[in-house]
Image (cartoon, rainbow, N blue to C red):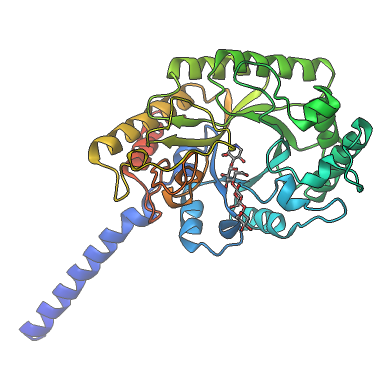
Length: 379
Ligand code: G3I
């Protein structure tokens, strides 16, 4: 064998070795679902383009990191039931199909919500206000049709969303004003009848507020006392770097669990931008005028803010790990920073960085740290 041939063989072998060595971490690197999957479901909301399968970068993240997903918008009553005698299941069907194709537990969101409800729901054909009995019938028909269509496929539903105010009183929505508090009972009863196997949830934001968590606990106890099925309370968890107080947040997890239901973290994101005024809600109707001072990081998050965000997420996932026996699902509200509703709320046209994956769908360093946090404590 000539000297040159030997050198060539050795060089190629070394090159092959390094290439394989470089690939091993990519194949072997655990995803969030591997490290957290023994504790609780871990997932994200999907927008209609993602659940149509047209966002390949999103699908790559989903396949590696998530085992559940929730429909961000396509299952809300407005998009899915735009007219009294017309449903549009196109996007919702795609969402459930996508979940089943990609090993994701599908979660439906949301059956009864004061926002995104179609106008026809509250009006008669001649434009009069709908009667109590007719609105009840319409709610029951909507839920029976939507939940019934996905019977045995959708694992759980946000049956009622955001029915409680921050002070613990019930939101004076049209559902409440026309039917009374009982609209909640009626929705849960209809959902259970439509799919007795599906889990049923009450979902709300700012659940770290004592008055709100106490009201949610009263609601759970009332539904249970009437023999109605409710399996979990969703703490949406639209949080900031400095709100809410995490001790209060943890007290809410414990208080809800003591009501005999599971806790779900349903819409987790961490707003890193200044708010127009101090508030910690997620009232989607809020819309403030754009000011440059409210959009300080249009070209990237400074290292110190990125470090704060990382620590916030590690603090949160440490709490979830501590309470994993009470928490059955942790769900981000968006896959990448580019998808987040927080780029446009409560101020339009901003650049926010609230999620675990950046605008190029690359995992932020905190993802590996969360994996290590759970691997270290592996059950
Ligand atoms: O699909 C239409 C499109 O056809 C139309 O051209 C466009 C312009 O009007 O609107 C599109 O619908 C938008 C929809 O998102 C899909 O992009 C709605 O206007 C817009 O209001 C809607 O915003 C969603 C918001 O809920 C209201 O439904 C956000 O994406 C979604 O992240 C947000 O999520 C809510 C949860 O459901 C409940 N908890 C709070 C959370 C944040 O508000």
